[in-house]
Image 1: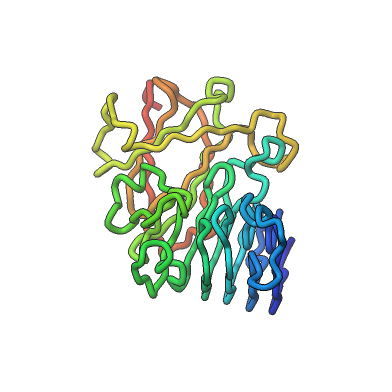
Image 2 (image 1 turned 90 degrees about the vertical axis):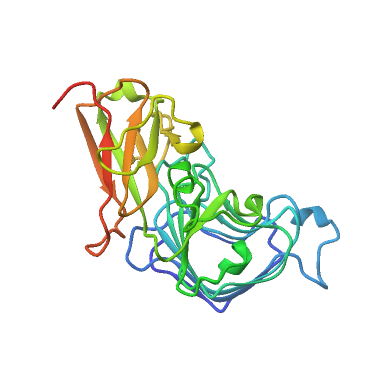
Length: 297
């Protein structure tokens, strides 16, 4: 899917997803849902079997690659057991799994009669959701963010160190344990991949914590609440995407900070590739990564 615009749609009574997307090209102009109303459970025309609405139905489900836009979308009547928004379609399927993540841009969203959950990040939870005008803020934690905010999963390497600028939702379960960073923070995704020696790092967890400075160190007994650990699950059996490396560790980070990154105990690499999101621009502050090592190079 490339630059497709769904404009002025009214969608109702879809028991899986009101609007669902699967794959998007990595184009500058993302697929867009615009000026649209999405209704979960109709007031006067609901199905007699109300369990249709309580088995994970979602208003919108974005795909597992590329970027997506939702602008001026109104969500109505999502009962308990349903979701307003899900991201990364099929990312919980081992045959279609991705280690990467997507970018979702939101603007002018409204919510009426919502008793279900607002968000589920499917699978690895690497997605970055840009609430560009703060229209999700009131539902998230009651705060006003007129200049926007950024929603990410509550990874410890960010959550533990930026509680004032990246707070949790008032109801964490309704937002898939995510956090929302205000406009003073810039979130960018970084991917580590093409690591050598490859066999040594198969099924290894990458661990990340924030450092106060480049000269800071990480204690061997660091509390688990202070670092994030993620695993690359692509093992060669995955059917697609075929161009994705089997060992790839992707996470969101806050620009202007220093992070310690390590794998296992004493694991070292002779080569690694680092990629950033296309969103990274010249005005963004840098991110410093510090790696443990067993020998000078």
